[in-house]
Image 1 (tube, chains in turn brown, red):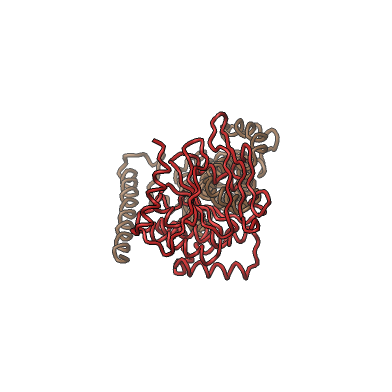
Image 2: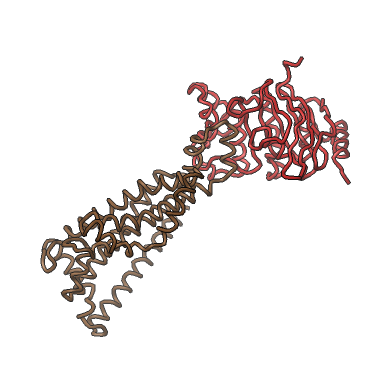
Length: 263
Length: 247
């Protein structure tokens, strides 16, 4: 049993590596054989070189890659954390308490469809172009999925389980905390995952606001000075970090909600 | 004599809009009794149980437990639902403890009863498993254990074995009898399976078709363990079947 599982895993790993190799191989060939101009795209090997160079060098965009990275990570994660800490409980309470739902849902329904980027002009006028302004834009993007999913998670609670608690004489608060919240965690984590992705992908847009640091800024600079390798290093940094954050979130979810994962 | 009465139902009536579902039902259940309610499908059996635990409010009539209006917050009531109802996020052990924790029993009592139930139902080996990891019949055993662990004043069971195959059902029926004898709980068991009703109960309440009212209270005084192939058993089963027929 274990052996077949291991074999399956090895097979999966080989396929994954094969996929990556083919992808980067074609890319390398496309640039080196001149199918694509080096002015618009660099080969993977050049990008690795730029990556190593940028680890310690500030030129040509004014800061090292770790500085950009740290600035962006701080920005994205702090906005994401605030959006989660406010959004998840808000969704829970709106899902459970009808009056709160009636009070807040109309506002939320109007705000919800506005794309985060559409907030930029008004944010510049009210909050300026500093760290707070950027945080707010990412917060808006990360907030919405947190609220919606937590809200739906509570709404989708199995009524039989609520009735079990009721027949034991549980109070509303006990029903909320011991039945509705645990039962919503499935949806909540989907929301948190979407929110994390949203915060990370809105980064570039937020860093369009007069920045001097950040991966989004680095990408913008790469375009201005026509350095596709810098752009791609920035893009990959965002992509790989996003994937790593997802893995960390999965591990966290397995700790908090183990009943969904155990074999 | 009246001290012996655990549950008193008087003139219980339930209407949904114009639809009369339960019509003026009155009966008593003695302490420690095992009562089965049988009736044609859709006659309002589940509505009746939901009224008893206040998931629904009656249109008129009264339900008294120990001479006080029934209230899950005050009385110790357990309900085993037809649908799977173990909490997916709690282990077997935590599921069994859930009701006792809501009732804020002392930790020693909770611990002692948990062990009792785990042993009685043969669940000790899976105490740390989640319901998802168990078979349907095992999950239902957890739910039954959770209910008996309360040592309830009144245990209500709404066709708990409707979705089980026959072998598992026989086994679980015996388990319920065993727990009932051990804990001295008062049990009200709803079923549409007449054989099950005769096998389990001390008394059968036979309901009529909608609007439901009690057609007859039938005492089942067969010795235990009961033999479903015995003459008296078959006689009783056929008698009740005849009473239920509405066509």
